[in-house]
Length: 530
Image (tube, rainbow, N blue to C red; front, side, top):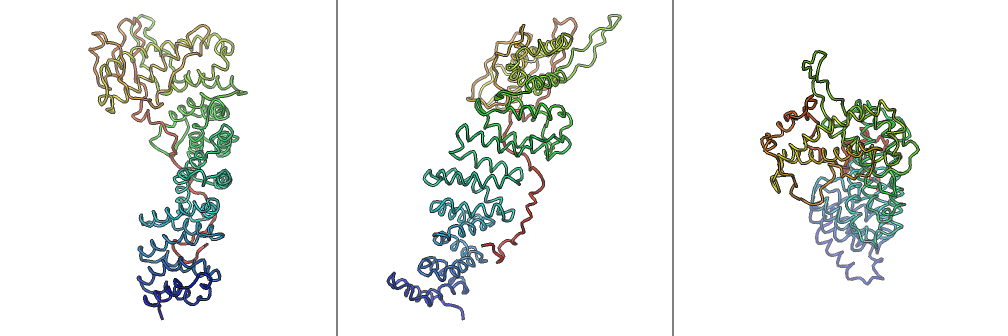
């Protein structure tokens, strides 16, 4: 026979009125309350409140009490579930904390937003009781739980850990997080990898130079830098890019990017044109070159600096064309089709070459023969002449524009294009010094602007003012009038509407699944691991 509301209140009264030292004598009364979970909605709601209140007084009924509360956490009535979940932290004492944390972690799989918030709040509350024990429960599910539970547990840690006070996140707790996270990293998807790195980067103990170096070592292990790259495998390529994005914010003058830069020069640049990506809309070549340019800032000593410079030099030759022939044998105009100028690619390659060139400043003089150097300078000169025309026309198009006028999609592209061309211009000037110089400093065009400012531009001439202001016209400007050979028809250069949106966030998974081989528990079924 089901327990009634009256019986629940009567037995609650017996326990509430008993002296603390006499409570254990009223085991029957507590058993009646436990049986309340078999009643109707009202009885269940009362049981959810009464069971935890006297839980600590009946250790011999501890398992029965926790299981009764779990029955309520799995009830079909969401209001009963919420009440039961709200009370779960009251069971978290001593050895029970790990078990309660494990249970709450499994309950993260709920699709009810209010219930999900209740689970989050309960987990945070037991974190403050015993952070390490709570983490044991969470990591147990991350390592062995269902995919949905694993995913949400990782997200919970990535959001909540950084909000916990220092007296909760002690060194011992942080060390435990680091140790367990390394275990999880042995088999992860791309999204999980990003979140786990975010967790580790937020740990106070890893903010030091030594800590950042440890994180870089973790990323190196994930990136498989000891293996050759298969450019035809999009997942392999994506894994490398994912890892590189996570490593980037860790690099500094004391934490070097040399291994990544060398790997890119050895394995990525030679296969640049054949790289594949699981993200169809991603310009994989531009993404790779941007990452390389970012990393080149933080190269330390490297054994293969000459080989790396040579690879960058070869790639520059690919993207910096020779000027087209202007006249035939009889003097007639045989202007060949103007080559496309890939400004975005060249900015990245020149920047990387310039950074590594500081480590071997005589490279162009001692390591490149005279004929090849002459060819290189002709290409630089041709590119530079085109830049001057394009820079003037971009300045005309942006003249006087400030504030909202610069925020239109068209003008955003022009602003970035101006940054790119100015950067290339500065770097080319350095290389034209005799001997080549590597002293100039530029900020990569996609780096975030520190503060919004009006674009400062020179006053254009009357001839320049006559130039059309649309991007279409900018990309097909008239030829320079004073150029007798008319070698330049700028620029059909490559610009993307997302050119300034470089991000360290992930863009896909390392592979289709983790294949951890752990069986599921079928949602809210009673085949609990807890």
